Amino acid sequence: MDTTPAAGPTTPADVSVGAYLARRLQQLGVAHLFGLPGDFNLALLDELLADGGLAWVGSANELNAGYAADGYARVRRGVSAVVTTFGVGELSAVNATAGSYAEDVPVVHVVGMPATTAQASGALLHHTLADGDFSHFVRIAAEVSASAVVLRASSAARSIDQALLTAVGTSKPVYLGIPVDVARSRVPAGALARPLRVLRSDAGASAEFARALTGFLDGAAEVTVLAGPRLHRRHLEERVRAIAAQPGVAVATQSASKAMLDESHPANLGVYAGAHTTSEATRARVDAADPLVLAGVVLTDLLTGSFTHRFDPGAAVDLQLDHARIAGDVFYGVYLDESLRVLEQVLAARELAAAPPAPGPVAVARPALPAAGDTPLRHAELWPLLQDWLAPGTLLVADAGTAFYGALELTLPDGCDLLGQPVWSSIGYTLPATLGAVLARPERETVLVIGDGAAQLTVQELGRLLTCGSALTVIVLNNDGYTVEREIQSPHAVYQDVLAWNWTQLPAALGAPGTATHRVCTAGDLVKALAEVRADAGRPALVEVVLPRDDAPDLLRRIARSLS
Image (cartoon, rainbow, N blue to C red; front, side):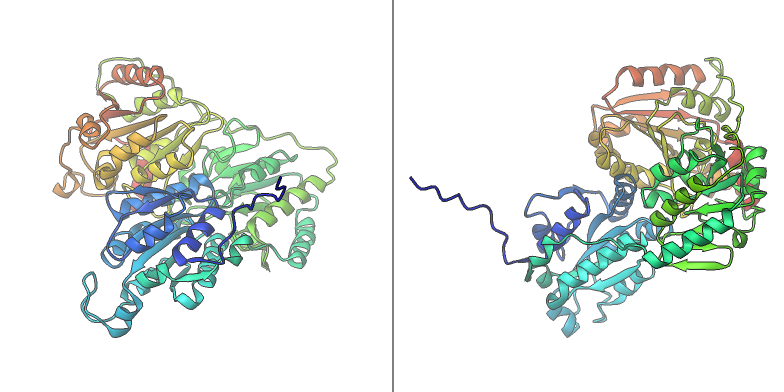
């Protein structure tokens, strides 16, 4: 009897460039690949999908694919990938890439390019500008990417690894151009046995930062932390909760990181946005804080109330993705995960004569639920009813404008997250981004709120979204046009109008006939529709909410006045 053990599967000595990239993406947690096919990326797609480790998610256009990859990366807490073809495809995705760059989302944009021989000869191919220059679009991509490289067969594996490390290290998108012949060329597979090592903080710089922070916080009975969206990019929500548990610590969040800390948490001050802060107590606590810790904060106009913040960033502790700063002293090589760990450690080691009480969540007057009457529904009634209906643990996605600034006025149940794009603020982003979010966390209840004008930009993805998400509700705010623009200027201008659509018929027309649809015009209609959605859990739903065209959330009106 032969007792020789059966031979196990062997690792090939080499793999194709496309297969190498696929394996590296899987090692970084990617399970879905977004994009569209085109003649210059077909060979690449065959190699990327050959081993079955990546599921293909085709989109209606490249912009939607880029948005979906962005949402996927945010919710899955890692990198994502989108594949387009050269020229016509990649240019359609540039707006999505720019948004990912502005909001620190590590999306890998993979572009199938013409063969190296065609590029070298300057052939006048289709999808080019017919001038023999194949680098136009790489140069465009470089403006909105942390790294933009066209692979060569001889160095492809190394270039892939460097680009992926850059995406993870900077939390920014990167661009990989892969010619048709390079996609199939062979590279050594040995490096795949060693997963990529993410950049780590410099030990010496970290120790120096810890000593300086200890001195800076010495004797401070109260420490105020302003938590920003870059904490999400490093998946540091648990660390924020640990910091909030320390005595004397209060945490406010920026609007792009609302509910990072449960809004019922005793240390939660709520959302801070300068003059647009809902609670005066929150604004006073942050503006007067000494010491103040800025953690992953981004100081843009919409996140600071049009720069009406009164604190001095130069005098604060500032913790950023790749460095930390204490007043004027900068500690390079101390990454955000490490600087937050040091902050928690220093806070825990403080010796306080008497531990100050937790500040308690800032009291925000919760509006009384409106009566379920038959008068036309308004924003003042919509948002309290929606808040009362949301379940704990829900991912609430809200598009730029009416939806996002209405959602900021909610007190979300514990475990909820708010996903939006307030820095780049590209309307229509959230519909395909919700597709990425649902694929990243299919078990999570997800609610998308989007305006009619915004939805019309990216509605091609609605059918796929509704067929992918069973615990999904899409709420379309039908207010007959671009409400946020009307609030800023020229409310009666013809360019503020959009064509009226039959929203409740769209799911079936776009490939999701099993969707439950509702059209509501009054508070009573909304209460009934939301109750039916909740009773029919596991079935996707679309709710069209008809609102007056001249109505808007109070916060949006204040912001619009500041912008105008």
